[in-house]
Structure formats: C-alpha cells, structure tokens
Length: 281
Image 1: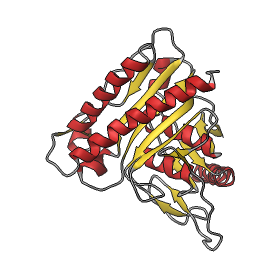
Image 2 (image 1 turned 60 degrees about the vertical axis):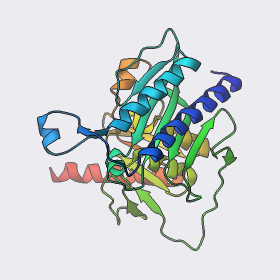
Image 3 (image 1 turned 120 degrees about the vertical axis):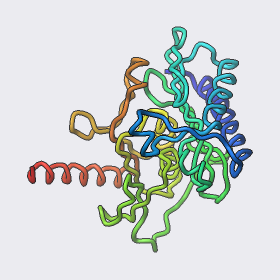
C-alpha cells in the first residue's frame, strides 16, 4: 500500500487540481461560452451530454499540472484520451466539470472532481463543489488517515434527531421509495460529497462513469460511509474499479453510497424491486 506521506502528497496535489477547476468554473460562470454535444446523431438531436469549452480547458490544465508532479501516473478523464502510466500502480480519474448541464444553464450545482486510484481502489479524493454544508464553495478532500476534510478542516456533522425523514440522492428524484425524501442534483460528484458530509443519507447512481464517482467514493470511505456496486445482477460491497486501465475506463455499474444502515437499506429495496419486476415479467 502507498505510504501515508505519499498519500498526503497526492492529496495536496489533488486539492490543488480541484481548486484549479473550481477557479476556472467561477471565472466563466454566467459568460457566453462555446457548447457542443457529444455522442451519435441521436444523442446530439436529443441534446444529451453537453460539453463546454471550459470542460476541455480545465482538463488540459489539470493534466499539465499533474505531469509536473506525477508524470508516471495514468490518467482517465472525461474529455481527453486515456493516458497510460509508466509502470505505475496509480491512476488519476478526473472530471473537470461534473454537472455540465447545470453549469451551462447557470444552475449552481456542479463540481470539479479528482480521484486517485491505487490498483483500482480509490485512495485519495478532492472535489471542488459549488456549495457545501457551510453554504460556500470549496474542496472536500481526503487521503491517508486524516479523514474527511473541507478546505483543510475536519468535517463532522451530527444529525438533528428532530428530523424524522432525511434525504436521498436518486437518479429520478423520487420520494416515497424507502424512508427518505428523494433529490436529484444533476451531479453525481456533488451527491457523493453530500453523502460524505452528511447532507444526504444515501445516494444511488444508475450507470455512473469512473470519473463521476472515483473521488467521491474515496470521500465516502473516509467519512465512514458504505459503498455498494451491482455486478452480474447482485449488490455487493464495492472493492475496486478493476486492475487494468482499459477495464477502469470502461467501468459503468450501478452504485449506492450512504451511511452503513441507509446504504444496506437501499440495496435491500433495490433487490426487492428487481425481484418484483422479475415476477411481473
């Protein structure tokens, strides 16, 4: 395993990179910018998967800075080609802007996400978020044994016992599925950070990409949350994204993050729902 000193170094760099992303986002928010839509003609016609000029510029900046610090590490990013490492077990998963649709419309829920994987396991995370438990933008981060922090300060939240129905991130924003009120923010990274910070009890993602959740899984683990993934029709504790770069880059599996109790309850609900659909078929 990487040493605490190395994890601390990578965490500091990850915070720096996420901060670069946040700074560029704030500088461009509200201005006119070029926007394109990725995918095939059908996806473009439906206006899915927008990408702004800021996405590409931020990822290029992040990769340039990363090359100065860890030139032998691999990189998986949303906007640019996978970069193989030079014999290293470390891979950085980068999403320059998660929640691009929100960003280009000025809806203030988006993030710049950086995660570090060691042999496919998230070990460092840094997510610049447009808002936080303090109602200010900043970076949630973790690495090594220091736990979850926001802008360098430990994050510790005690739930209000008077609140009987807490919140859950849901791909469809549904309420009434389980004991939570459902929310859909439009940013998987934001929802991961909010689970780690205790703003959401649990969050479920249908088919996230690795760059959407790599940093967030690290934050979740640092906060004591549980993470489950669905593989071959079964829910099981998340272990890794795989041990091959190509395998990591293609990873897209249903995911659940939350407090141990809420994450387990959500997986039970998903299992029961799948069984019910199977019976109806």
